[in-house]
Image 1 (cartoon, helix red, strand yellow):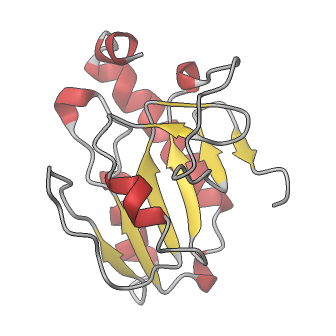
Image 2 (cartoon, helix red, strand yellow; image 1 turned 90 degrees about the vertical axis):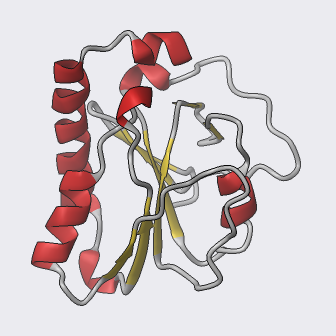
Length: 156
């Protein structure tokens, strides 16, 4: 999955990211968000680009507090509660479990955010139809947004 994503051209990442951002922007109830945590995308990993989303929220919803940390090894977890958490996904399955890059930050972070809407951003080619192995500490997301679709948890 990593090599498939890394083989995408910069133009492809940008175009697909723009489509994902548009899907997300149209489908979030921004009026009910007070504090949002959104990852800062890493260009060299060809992650879904989040700058357009953060810029939209800051421009159109200036009352929303936007937190955009750079995640690194040993990162401390934020101690505040969020209404919306947007996470990167390398892959996902139909149960909305996500595959990240293995650092475990989001596993530790999401468990302490039970009331937050948890949305993953992933390119559509990250769907794993056979499912992902999940461990007891894994937290499924509420929604996955791709350039092709919005997938919601069964009980949402």
